[in-house]
Image (tube, rainbow, N blue to C red; front, side):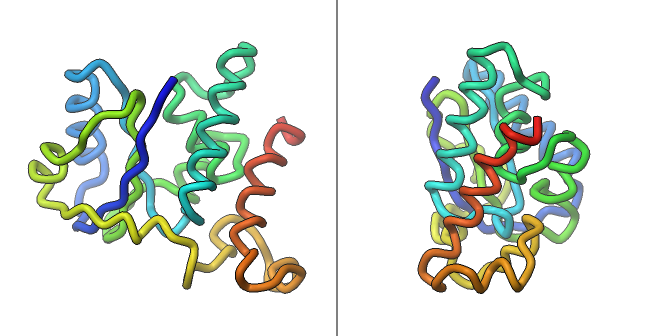
Length: 164
């Protein structure tokens, strides 16, 4: 299944309302949408890896979640339980940098306008983010050069298959 990844800046005051609006918007276009706190995203490769792992789990009948979007959230966050994945990477009141995935690829300009957000794909980049959100400690973080820190996020994504 194809997908598209976007970044946005905006204000989240009532996450449940925002998620409902985004999901209704995506369903009306024959797809799914996943909104995440961009602080838990360490680059487009991190998002793509999470999607590929989720798609493989779906193809093998091994999904832990009920939807491809939520399975992707599990892989992105490195968590086995949906509630834990939401705690790590879900949007919450005060979220200002948002990562958006659509399944299939859907243009999001209308959604962004409806939510009062602006597109900013730079929020997906790993630079300046703390891997502690994914459970990577300072000691583990020092095992790789600064320019390779996002690789630890990819490792967390891949290790979820072992934990399952």
